Structure formats: structure tokens, C-alpha cells
Length: 282
Picture 1 (cartoon, rainbow, N blue to C red):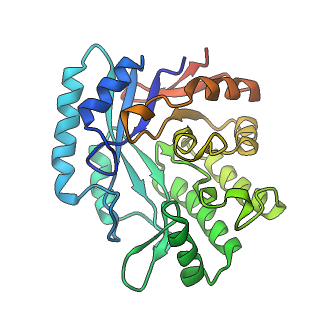
Picture 2 (cartoon, helix red, strand yellow; picture 1 turned 90 degrees about the vertical axis):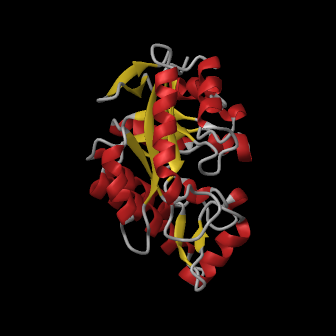
């Protein structure tokens, strides 16, 4: 049984339950170690990240929840921090907050911004994705995809996030090959190049079940061909549900664990507050 989840959201960002409610649900589900990872504020206006003003309360509430669950379940303070493709880096706020965290997830959610200053999100609506692809990339999907995976690789080298978030999120709006064929050689070469960079770091790639809850069983991040290569390359994994409500805690954990074992994985990483240790997939 998988006993951890280091990708948990709350009402501080786009979650639907409080820090305490999510912790209670995790404990009830049998988890022994969890981490909260609200979305750090973006430099673009949006409706899904936390506010800068809420950061101090966020850190305090997690500390209080840690105290309440002491000896029952380990709780760690994290954030999901965005890398920006247009500036090839993270925000100054991210650099300031990183030392205050136990760990952080590095992710890419946007391809840039529109002329009105709003973000062109990769994983928001199909309409926004399509507009961003046309207005920022001139409809060139290969350039966007290559920039995305190049950004993942650069993020791993520059900032060394503990966890690489939803590695192939770029596929979220690509149902039925709407924009590109995920079996094409150029696509495989592109994500393989990113994995080769990650392999040289200490970053962990998360196996993220959150998309399965929101978009169906086929939306596991990373896709199975990627997981096979991750195993071959010896890149460590952890399993996260990217939960935004209590019902999302541990979503699809049993079948995901079975899949990982079928592929050939024997362990995943858990955090003890100081380092990430291997734990056997039971």
C-alpha cells in the first residue's frame, strides 16, 4: 500500500477543502506521510494560485496541523512552483520562498501571456490552450512541445526541485491526438531528451494520478512509455494524487501501484524531513 502523497492542494489555492480537512482525509486513508503544495502566486492574473498575502497564514496553518498530527502522520510544508517558458526561470518570489519550505514541486502550467497580461495556461480550458498556441506560438505545436520539455529540463538543472510535477502535462488538451501524435518519433525524442537531463540530477519524477480523477483513467502522468524509460534510466519516482478535494486523496492508488509493479518498479520515494528514501512497493 502506498503510504504517502506530496502533492496536496487546499483552499489556499484551487483546492476545495481546508488544510485540516485534507490532513484528516489523508490520515483516514491510511497515509503516513504527506506534503501540502499550494500553487505559488503566478506573475500573471489567474484564479487558481494562492495570493501573496496568504503565504504567511498558509505556512502557519500547516505548522499548526503538523502539531495536531504529531506522532500520527508526518506533514511537510511545500509549494508547487512554476517555471516560466517566456523568462526561462522562476519568479523572484519563488526564490525567496524556497528556503522556507521542506520541499517543492517544480511544474510548468503556462506557455506565456496574452497581450492583456493574462496567462496562456497549458492545462486550463481547451479554448485557452488553443488561443495560446495560435497567438504565442503561431500554431506551431512542435515548438511549444519542445519548449515545454526543454523548460522541464532547464528547471531540473537550474533549481533542482525535489519533485518534477506531472511531467507530460502538455498532453492534457491533446485527447485523441487533437494537436499531435504522441507516438511520433519527434515527440518521443523530445521527452527522452528531458529525461536524460533529469537523470543527471537528484530530482524525483512524480507518478500523478490527479488527471485520472478529473479526465479519465488514461490521463496518468507520465504516460506508460515514459514510465518504462524512467525505470530503465534509474530515475526515482514518488506517487502523488494531486488532490484538490478530500475525494481525491489516494485516488487510483491501488491500480497505479499494480501498474508500476507490472512495469517493473520495486520502490518509490518517501520523505523523512531530511532526505528522500526508498520504500518498497508492497
